[in-house]
Length: 118
Length: 137
Image (tube, rainbow over all chains, first blue to last red; front, side, top):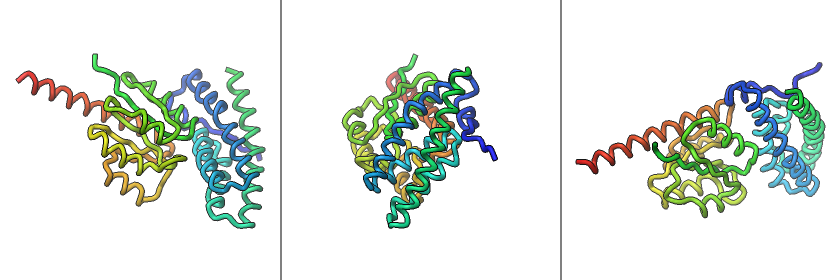
């Protein structure tokens, strides 16, 4: 099943349908979000669970804004689990983050292609 | 022509802050300054700031602490919460402490935000006109 990685309905409802404006928003996302995911990766690696929860919370709203809901839901689960840390939750956080990591890379590629097409 | 409405935004999510700035830039008559933490906002804010847009979860302080600080120092400032924090107690406390609006970061958030700041601007203009009339008579 090929599910769309993102949905620009929210962006279009908020900013209108001008392609230049849409591209500007996508560029803002690409300029800001990958570094946040890098920070989250480091926090998970270093087991800084307070930071993990805060960074997942931030990332969640960024991905949700782009309609990347599968990633936003993973980040939401990471945010909650990092607040109630246990050996089981550490495993689950790592599993969820692996999905976030792989899916977000695909998303960045698709968004970059979309910007270049315009 | 009236002066720009001066808006300060505090949100540690740089993408979301940038979105707020871009969306408000589509309207005329606003000047927006962005801050990533409470300390920077509280240090830089002055009497000339008309509206503060406050996220709840920040690295150095929560939104309610910021709101209390601002309400003590700036009686004319309008404070809008823009947050993913859904806890009813936080929403109630925000309104009790003088928040003008509490907007949840959902799919309507930025549209709601623009409506709210336009309402505040209209009120500011009305107050200014009343003050001018008082001065005339």
